[in-house]
Image (cartoon, rainbow, N blue to C red; front, top):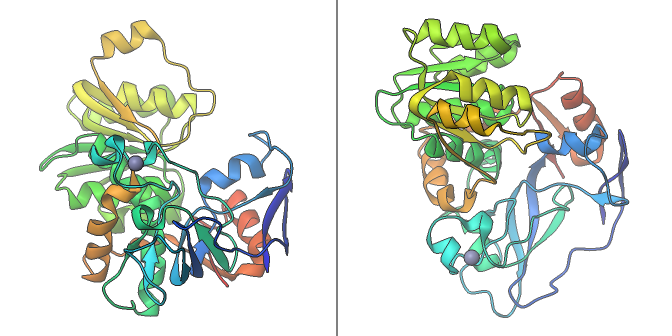
Length: 338
Ligand SMILES: [Zn+2]
């Protein structure tokens, strides 16, 4: 089969790769309904994260179970399933506490930008839908696999409650889903920090009540102005840069919550600043598996349409164009169909 491999800065190829096959009795093979390019894929694509040789890419996936290993009991061939970027047994202590992305058996998925994918720990990692979903729901179910699950964790970890004032730093797919999630959790005011018109529009559609285009000191001042000088109850940091982390901590009221779900690149925190900020900090790789059953249910009921974040759809073999479009910010997120 052919799959997606990153060779170096902006050198992404769709080429012959080994077939996906069962390697362990707990594996499943899924036939991809759709996959996509992640914002986090852009770090190595842009050369901002070192590569360890040619790297197979992709960690967002949903599709049909093609084959299962002899020990798999909870999913069977023909079922439609959604998984997450981290595998989990869903039984170890960390999984039981709801932190499946820290599972003792965790592996980070890769190779999903391909027509077939081997998923380890299939019983604990995959969630099947009750029926085969209609084709128009596939983008939303795919979003649940990572960006929606991560946005949901961002809102949850930032303690978004009914009536809360929320700030979302970052207008990528995760940030936009942070807005959607905060809305679902009953936030009254959702301030999206965004400078891009198409993203501002989608943020509003997902539930943002205010848009702030300023950044740095001006961004902080604007948030203070919008919150009567107090700061926000919950701030979702969905980027992972030193600037976005500062923006988040400084926009939060004393006693408020900052979540951080953007993979940190160069973020360092000053102990004194943190001490006097009085904020709660909670983040990390999102335990998407914890939320998958609920998110799938919301999607199938039509309560949320996270698939709107895909504003470019390409055949899988045009994956390089998907990376380029996202890199150049011509697209928010690219969906790929085999
Ligand atoms: Zn576990």
